[in-house]
Image (cartoon, rainbow, N blue to C red; front, side):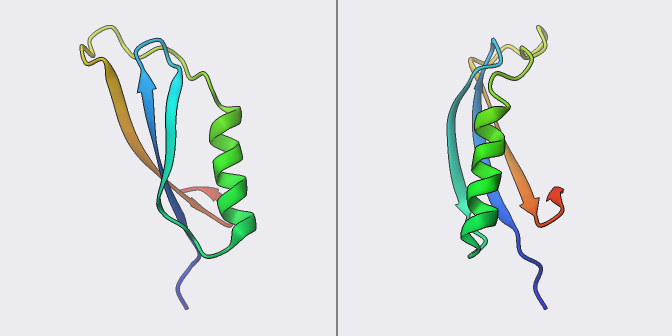
Length: 70
């Protein structure tokens, strides 16, 4: 059986603020999708990006399953 997973992406500003959250793939389970989205909202802001990183934003994808972040 395929394991449930939701794939979300976030866009982070240099100061650590998450400015965008979106689904790359929904799990098909509303509770898991909503929980993953809420977890990212609650984690805002993240620590600032390292000073060596010179881009204005950083985008990263995250995979959530029933046991949490993979």
